[in-house]
Length: 217
Length: 244
Image (cartoon, rainbow over all chains, first blue to last red; front, side):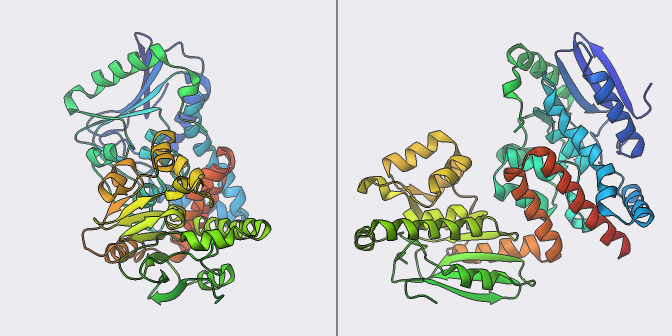
């Protein structure tokens, strides 16, 4: 059914795997499949929690910037109206952020690189568990861009303005230890036990989860 | 400059510096510690990438002096007018679309702490002291400080700080999240200059403004609207990058 995603259910926990190894980049196909998964599958699935993770050593390297810039500039040349271009692109943001509308806990289990849009996706989860080998960051400003897929909206709700400015404006990558100190993530575990720890968390959270606990407005 | 304002402006490259200057403690004579029109003129500068507020000398600011406060309180209407203008100044600072850092040495009390709380980033030297002494006088912080501190720290630490009027040192202030960075050098201003330079020197003014606008929107707008504007700002930058 999917090419760059994998969805399976085990013991009432839904597993969404980002599946384009080694770095699981987020191209146009990813965003199409993610939209389909969120609107047609996640809503109806009989699961008590969802775990999002990457196939292999990495979570995801994020959006494919050249593809994205190409799409934006072509459609801008075509219609000449930034608002129309961004209306189309905004669907991706709204769909990422709508993970917060599910009434079950969503857990991002992060191994290896988790940058740009990939980190933005993780920030839309209710709980972020990282392996000690995770590398996190929003590097967009180092290319003259800014986070464009929920990062500037979700991050300031989790952390202080000072931390949001540091992460977004510096564009520097950071370790899970730093992220935990900043309260950007919730837990660090050894890489080998990342998924089993995420399952433990999923079971714990789902037994006491109410919609009010969602990290929404 | 009005006679009761205690703020001076200078520029170092793309960085604006506001210095509070009134005796050793930099007491605020009035809630209008700065003339809002001056502030608007200074910051209406398309070369500006960041701002630092500091106290002249060893202290940031001890807030209002008791004698000034008593004389201000003689006229109720006037006092309430002045407090509204003070709030307007701090709201203007908080909503600036370039980063503003409070560089804090020595005492940072009352109205001084309210100014620091309106800034986006607080950097303090190891010897700084923080307090809201208002409750000792039967008062509460009046310039939006209670609201800002609840947003920053949550209810629990807010009560400790405001109701007890206890002094908090830099280390504890960092622990509860009142201070963002502890300055390595003795003068927090040096660390603030380094921080703001690192954050902004490789970034265009437009990019800095977009990022700050988006961060403010996250707290002010509902999520659908905030996300819409984020994507629009992103697209504007993307078209720019593709051209260059």
